[in-house]
Image (cartoon, rainbow, N blue to C red; front, side, top):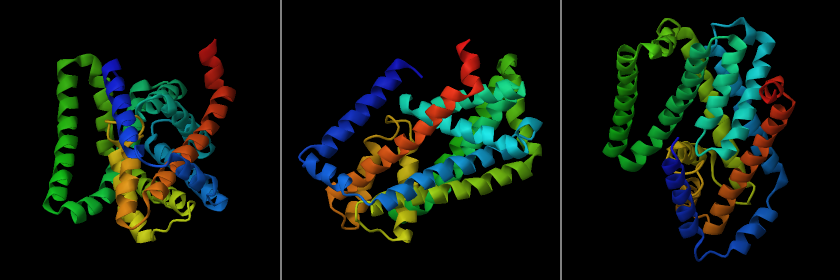
Length: 299
C-alpha cells in the first residue's frame, strides 16, 4: 500500500471523527462508557473471540492441500487469526493481517501460492456473505439503487477473476498463483463449507456489535441489529478509512439515531466496540511473542 493511500485514509478518518465529535460533549460519552454494563462487554468480547475461532475453521476447510492443518492443526489457524487481528491495529485495512497469515501458512505448508490462494478465498467468502447480509438492508433503504450496488459487486468480482487470468497469461511468473486460485473450481464442497462458516461468522460479528449497544443501556431489537450491523460492517470494510474509524462511528450515529438513540450513546457504543476489538486483538500479540514463527523471524 502506498504512502499516499495511507495518508488519505488517515486524513479521512481524522476528518470524519472531527466532524462527528464537533459540538458534542465528549465528557458525556466518557461517562456513558464508564457506566457501561460489564456483562454485555464480556459478551461482546466473547463474540469477537468466536468470530476469530470460527474463521479459523473456515480457513481450514480451504486448506485441503496440506495435512498439517487437519484435526488439531486448526488451533494454529485460530492463533494466526488473532495475530492477524493484532497486525491490523497498525495497518489501514485488514489486508496487513492477511499478508502475515498467508506468509506463515506458506512456511508451514511449503506452498506459498496455495497458501495465498486459501487466504484470499477465506477473505472473499467472508466478504461475499457480509455483502449478502448487507444487500438486504441496501435494497430496503435504496430500492433499485441497492440492487444496482449488488449487480456492480458481481461485475467487479467477475472482472477481478478475468483480470487475474489475463495477468497470468501476460506474466508467466504469476501463473502458479492464478492456478492455485482456480483449483477451487474442482473443490466446490470446500468452498461451500467456507461459505457456511462465513454465515456463522457474520452472526457472531453482528451479535458483538449488538452487545456493544446494549452495554451503554441503549436498546435495539435483534431484527434491527441484523438489519443495521451487516451494512455497517460492509461500509466500514471499504478501503477509504483507517480500520473503519470515523466511518463506523458515522454509521452508528446514523442508524441508532434513526431508532431514537441519542448521539452520545450511539458514539459511545461505537467507541466501546472499537475498544473491545482492540483489547481482543492483544491476545494475538501474546500469541505472536510466544510463537515459534515469531522466534524464527527474529533469528
